[in-house]
Image (cartoon, rainbow, N blue to C red; front, top):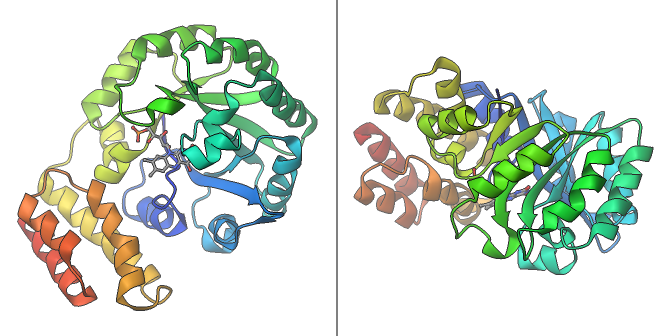
Length: 309
Ligand SMILES: Cc1cc2nc3c(=O)[nH]c(=O)nc-3n(C[C@H](O)[C@H](O)[C@H](O)COP(=O)(O)O)c2cc1C
């Protein structure tokens, strides 16, 4: 089974991906956070994140969010010009701002929009597409209406995160509904959602032996070694995890500090990773990292926390 790194806006950007593959690896493909076309342009930040010169990961799949072929085309053009031949279409984003524009999970109640996108997909012969979706936006029945359209489209695979858009991340994943989808989908299926430990991955693999793979999101932010643990069949001990986290942190710091001016930008980029990373570290250590107001205090807190881990 393959292991994929999920797209997470604000987290799994080029610097994280480049550092992760170098320090950990164990991932068969990394997905970029979604690129969007808005007010007649693509954000510079999104462009930089897919530019080849900023990426060392070969197995990188750009993800896009769009409701119509017109919104999709400029994104595909940028991606193709950068030499990519793979694109993932986001049909799962639950951010209300996106959903309101019928983007992400907001597409799922509208089979006509999905059919429009799939028509464009079929026309586009230089790119091979995949879809990442939820069960629905408002109801767990929505995927059923989309299934014939998606089954007929030339897709490499579908990644299913078995929740509703309106649930965001609150309710537990619906594994029974996933089982129904897994049985009905003609394309290879990737499971995504709440896989936080090696045991979680193995349980899903045993339950769904025909899966093409699993996609790891917050679980990989928390334990970036999850992919290598799956490959070796063994969990790392804390001291190994701490050492690897330190190496990845050093690499990210080296990349980010010259780019981000001053304390505030650097700290506001780095601190959110600690909301997820190594959740079983001592509470007071984590608090010291999150409370640090200068780079010096922050680095000292990181150093102390990893030494104690
Ligand atoms: C902060 C954040 C940002 C996310 N950004 C994206 C995104 O850009 N594209 C996408 O398809 N999913 C996005 N997701 C959803 C994740 O890729 C994933 O589907 C979800 O977190 C469930 O998987 P997990 O339990 O392994 O994290 C995001 C989730 C979070 C928490």
